[in-house]
Image (cartoon, rainbow, N blue to C red; front, top):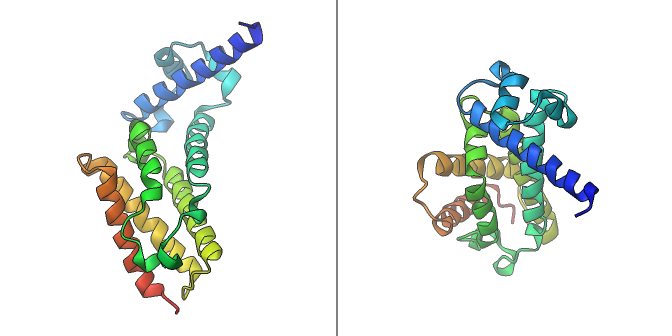
Length: 198
């Protein structure tokens, strides 16, 4: 293995250790009470290593949020191509295209649950809500779906989806992705009924 490859692996490993340690701390204490030394000790890295990656704790939080949201964007980049019956959103009873998102949520459940929690980050919710808004806005334009107010419709969908996902993460871990998909599909269909402009 080349030295540069080894350095990249060490860099990624250290970053992952710091992210995991940060989430573990944030689950118990507010971010303003997390010190660099405390984080470094839990992550088993030096303070110097922390500063090679981040300027401060808040930059680490932002990195975690942005990495998660970027993964979501990649997973859902082709959502606008997902086929609806006759391009009719009212006929959608499930959202099978989002199964991959649900599995991604399960994989990252600890991070997401903490970021949604009492010491979590409101900005993470806002970023996720914006992500859902953007993919639905793109879908509406792609399929020429006519709604009374596109902004209000996408806001209603993104807020309701995120609310259901948050409830699923915190309260209904026993529910599988297919059941959740059906709930979200029916909910989205009902929201569209109120905005239908055909």
